[in-house]
Length: 316
Image (cartoon, rainbow, N blue to C red):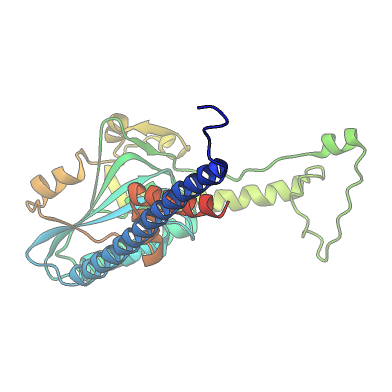
């Protein structure tokens, strides 16, 4: 087409067509963005209804069952494996009139001796209060240190041949930076009220009297651990002092040492030992908002992101 054949307003029409096409695309993206957002909210409300109905159903189970409580992860005050969470699940499991037995399924490297002691003592109390309901500990991948402290309160302990079991000991970690700050020419300034308030300061040389005090503290906690294991396991433990050295063993070796009673999974214990393979999970769930955020499907989340990006593109 020659320049003479072109209409005077050719450029204007071309720009109008481009602008109109862009407007149509923007409207399409906006509609899809709204759709995906509404879909996301609908999904959230659906999850909310399911979670609420699930909580209501847990309080009244139907039929005889084996109760399951999970102890998973590091045992500490602010974790899913805290004493509050585990004990809450155990109490509900024992209190349910249809529970024929309780399985505490453990997969934990240990953690706080205090939290572990809380759980251990509560297990003993519940076993006395409900003498007809046995509690069996089942160690999956690992049941070490504080996790074994908990397991020692069970009627019997089961594990796999390849499970990691033991670590009956206590540790405290730290660092020393005395030489480092000397080489860097750093002047350490520490102000305290109380002669020992700065004890174990990593920027000061070790004080033998302070390390002796800490060692005595660790030894005392270790002895509490040993006494708890001996009380729980009784004459099932072999006469072998390495049991309390802090070493870990496979389930195969743990069986020889008397640290566990038999090989088996949670399903095996429910089916073959308790003779009730209907398993009800009494593990305490996280708070509702956390559970909702965790359960939000990746596909819906991606769709929401696409919708938001579409809106942002339109603004640009």
